[in-house]
Image (tube, rainbow, N blue to C red; front, top):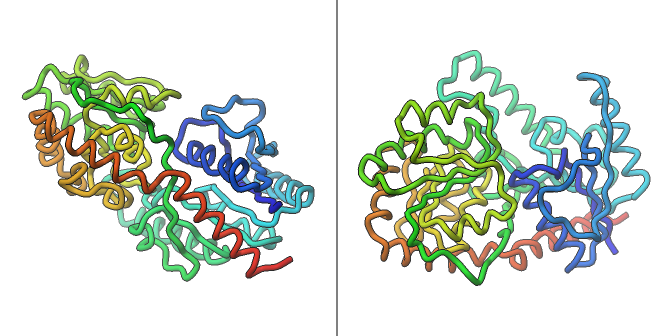
Length: 370
C-alpha cells in the first residue's frame, strides 16, 4: 500500500481546495487503496465543513511567533511528520510561497507534486496596478517559477494555466466534480445563483452592477449569493447604493449547496480570474446553464459557449447582462442548455479524474524507486 502525504494549510474551510481534497483524498483511500495522510497547519480541533473519508489519517502542526520563528516551527513540524510516516509521495496543496519552496526546505525526501489551485493573478488585489506594484509582481512571479521547478510534477487545473508557468514539469489535471445528482433543476424558478467568498477575485461587485441592469428589465427575478461574507468588501453597501437591496440576498456558505443549485435557473460567475471554476461544473451537473466572464483561467475549458452556457469577454458588464437576460427571456433555451451542461460535465466525475492522479503517483514511484 503506497503512502501518500498531502501538505496543506487547513481543510476545515468551505473553499474549493477543501472540497476538492475531500473528494480526491477520500477516493484514493476508499477506491484505490492508498494510505492517505493529511498534514494541516494550526487547525486544532476545528470541525470539517466537507465530509472526508474515515480512512484518512490527520496530522496538525502548531506554529508560533512571526516570520522566521513561524517558518522554523512549521519546517520542524513538517519534517517530524515525514520522518514518522515515511511517505512514498508528497503532494503539496498550498498556494502560498512557502508551499512552492517546500522541496528546497525539506531536501525532497521522496517524489513531490505541487497542486496549483489558483491563478498567479491572485497576487493582484486591484484593477489598477501601479508601476511599483508591477515590479513587485514580477519579483514574486520569478520566485514562484524558481520554487516550482524543484517539484517532480507541477499540476495545474486548466489548459490556460499552462500559459502562466514556464516549466518543463507542468501537467493539467482538472478538479473532480463534487456530485452528479439524479434530480436536477427544472429551470422554472425566477432565481439566479452565485457561489464564492466576498473578495476582489470573485468579482461580485461586477455581478451587482450587472444585476442592477437585469432587474430594471426583470424586477421579479432574484439573485442569491452564497459564500463567506467580508464586510470590508462593501457588497451589501453596493447593493443598497444600486437600489437592488431587495433583489439580492447574501447567504453564508451552505453545506448542502446542491439544493440551492437545484432551485436555481441560471448560474452566474463574474470572477476576475479563477483557478478552475468548480462552481460552474457543480451548477451544470444540476442542469443549470451558466453565464461567466471568460476570465483566466477555467471557464473556457468548462463551458461550450452558446451550447451549454455563455462565455462573455472578461469585464464586459453590458454583454454579461445581455446573456443573463437572454436566458431569463427563454425558458426553453435554459432547459436545452441545462441538458447539454449535464452531459458536458460528466467528464469531470471522480472516476474519470482521480485515476489520472493514481497514474501520476505510480509513474513517479517507478521513476524514483526507493
